Image (cartoon, rainbow, N blue to C red; front, side, top):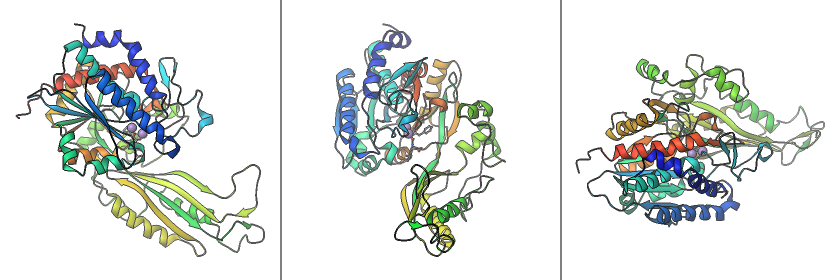
Length: 461
Ligand code: BES
Ligand code: MN
Ligand code: MN
């Protein structure tokens, strides 16, 4: 029998081919014209689970995008791990900034460029191929494995949230630990376990002024301009010091302890290099916190898009009828979306000039999380990672959000293990997203090692 590493080495081509097949399906959840692609993607995964792994797998219909569930043959007395991933991807916009077609995986210099290469098709598949590796090298799995894939992580996980409400469904998903890799590792040669994620809450603010666009010469200086008003209202939200100025915003933030700041400082990070990679020469934010802390453990505010008035060629002298912006806050424990929504509503009302109406639409929201490090499953996963990298994982807090996993943890009472396989520089959500072959194969090897260690944890059941 080959070792897992040897097996992975021998099957590189097969794993790459399968991964590329998945990448070619444009499963963009935010765009409704991709509905058929969501189904194709779900069926593709179910086929891989029952065809290649011999799992009992099926597509689960929901009100929206299907879920995919698959289960290994039972291994009595062994722990059960539920592996989570999402098959939906972000839109490719802005298309003209892609150097290669966004749904044609292109290998260049050890990097596979494609939307979803990393987030989350590449990372999800590492677990599937790890299970394949264990099956082929050990003859059988050392523990019970369940897979759950959803197609709505990028748009708020509505179907999976609803699914978790039924006891029967929770029994189907029951597990000792939930394993996923939908986060980042700290460096190419350094594994990480993410013990904290920020929450996120999203809104759209629309201001309406005159009942049509007006000539800015005839009306200018005499009526309120909605775009100007919107800019002023949004600019009031955050100061140049990175402080959010909504009253009460920081009330529920759990302060970072000296001990934790010491831990977070262990994450390898080169500020100049990280900035240079995205074409910047200066950081922004709260000066009293390090950049690692600002990104993973402090709240933030960002305008994601802003619209209003004439944006075509040349100029057009108008006062626009409407203006709107989409924006998000990242939250940390114990901040909650609900009080923020109330505070925000009155914050904007107080600043709303005469002559415009406002509508603040809440889009989605979830609080931040931190998970205790004492879990025997988490410690077992750390041993698995150490065995692959020859170095212990760094415990990190990531700035991104996966709101559904807190719900899953609570609904199933299982321990969470977040072991990212990708890197911050992979450009997830950006044009030219990529995943390196090195990280893809290390991910497979790591997942196999983690599963092997998880199998050894005594569950007392
Ligand atoms: N995989 C990311 C989240 C992530 C990335 C966590 C890197 C930690 C490190 C996930 O797919 C994502 O993008 N989530 C969205 C959630 C939102 C749409 C509700 C996010 O964070 O913006
Ligand atoms: Mn993701
Ligand atoms: Mn994402």
